[in-house]
Structure formats: C-alpha cells, structure tokens
Image: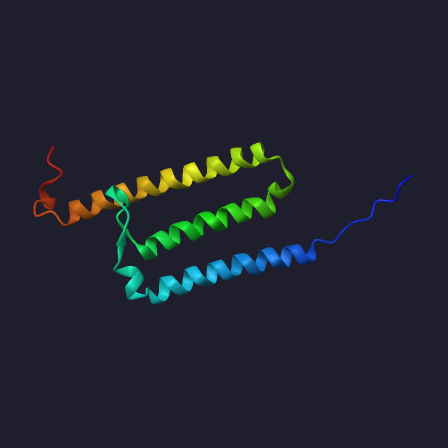
Length: 123
C-alpha cells in the first residue's frame, strides 16, 4: 500500500488572498481618489463610451471573478474545454449585464434630464 500524504495549501491560500486584496485595494483607491486623467478621458464606442476609470473597474472585476473561479472552484487542474465553458459563460454574462446596466442607466439619465420628465407618466 502506498501512503497518502496530505499537502498543506496554506501558501496557496495566502497567495490568492494577497492577489485579491491588492486588486481590491487598487479598485477602492481608484474609486476614492478618481484621478482626473482617468475619470475625464472617454474611451470606447457606442454605448461603451465610458471613462478609462470605468473600463479599469470593469476589467478588474472580470479579472477578480476569473481568479476566484480559478482558485476556489479548482479550475487550474481541469481540462481546457471545461475551463473555457465556465469562464466563457461568466465573461459573456458579465459583459451582457454590464451592457444592460449601462443602457438602463443612460435611459434613466436621459429621462431625469429631459425638460418634459414630469409629464412622462400620462395614462
């Protein structure tokens, strides 16, 4: 019989904690200080005409979500097709949700800034 030894994952857990903490600290710092060169610079097209700061938040959120899946759902040991099935679905849903939120946010902004906003609900 072969002896099975249990390997400690303490180092890996602290590494994941450190990486996610750094990404979160960067997000919070950018959210608090809002550097003008990132906040007032527009990038993108159509509905995605956002400031660079918003793009950084979206990208960091996707990176954090992928890394959480990679580390805590143990995807690093799975086959590439299975990983892409899960990661691709996640990326698609995050992009879809982001587009919906941006579209609805723009609509609400337009309604509240419209000169006839008070007369919108006529039955």
